[in-house]
Amino acid sequence: KLPEVAAAKPASKSERVEKIELGVKPDMCSPGGVVVPSERLVFFTFFGTQQDGGEGTAMIAFSGCPTWQFRCAGDEEQAAHSVDIEKLDFCECYEVLDSSWVRSWESANGKVRPRLQHYIITFLGFNPGVCNGAMNFECLAQDLLVDFFPTESFDDILDYMAIMDAPE
Image (cartoon, rainbow, N blue to C red):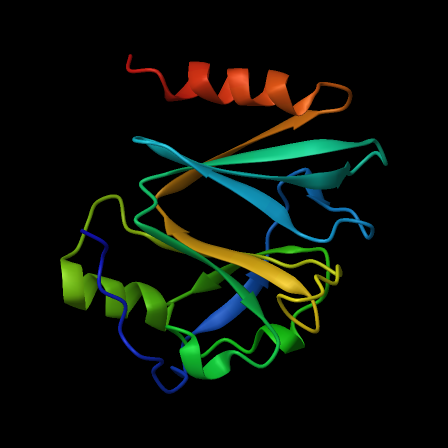
């Protein structure tokens, strides 16, 4: 059963968006990312740039991730929160503090510990037939772990995901 998603709420006076430094961010040439959900984790990969300028595939493993979505300009009516993604910088990583999406999700599904965080990753890319602007990823998750692969094939990265997702 999928978690319920409440309709968008008016902006909270305390809801604010802050850039977070993960050591890697989407490259200006990256049109978006790929989501690989599993039993324990939700993996999100994209072509990224490290702080030192190195390029390759970034992989973020989100733990305790009950819901995620892709967003693009003009879909505000369908959003589960009030953050205007068009006002965010391209190719950045963000955390929404005091998120109305977290509150709505917890109201419908119950609180979890550690508390859910609301993450947004923005892209510059254009995806014809899907949206007429940047495609952005966002999710609710308890934690995240970032890895970077400068030369590995996507098959190698999928193998790494399987190892990370294996029960302990």
